Length: 176
Image 1 (cartoon, rainbow, N blue to C red):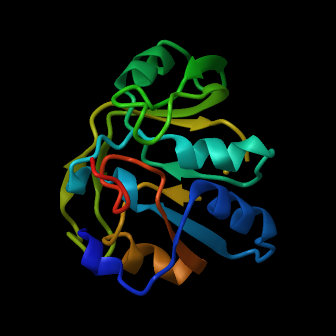
Image 2: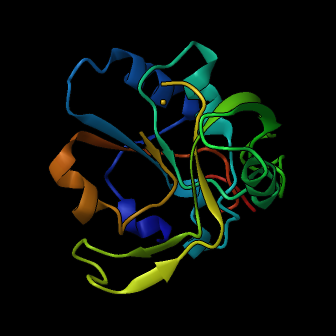
C-alpha cells in the first residue's frame, strides 16, 4: 500500500527489527512486515536485507514468507526433502535495493506446486498459486514480505506486528 496507509506507525530499519526480534521473549509471534518489498507496490519480492539482519547475530525461530527466487526453487526441486544444500537466496533482481543474496545452508522441508486455498478473511475459499515453491529451513527466523492484507490473518497469532523498511523498491524512504 502507499505511504499514507501507515502514517503514525513507526517504520523500523532492518537493524532495529533485528534488535526487536532478539529482545522479543513472548512465546506468541512477533511479525515483522517488510513493506518495502511488496510486489503489490511494484517490488520484486526478493529483498534480503531484513533476512540478513535477522540472521547476522544468529537469530532464532525465524520464518520468512514469501521470498521470490525461481533459481533457488529449481535447485531445491532437484534435492529431496530433508536434504541440505548451500545456495544464494533471493536478492537477485536489484540487489542495490533490498540487499544482495546471502549464501545460506538450507534444509529442504517441503516442495509444492504452490497451489493453495485462501482461508483468511480475504478471498476466503479462493484458489491461488505461487507456482513451484519450496519450504526451506535456514535457521530457527517470522518476517513477512507483505504490507497490509496480512494483518487480519496474522493479528490473532501475533504479540506484536512491526513494519520494517528493508530498502526494497517500494521503500517509502527511497526515490526508487
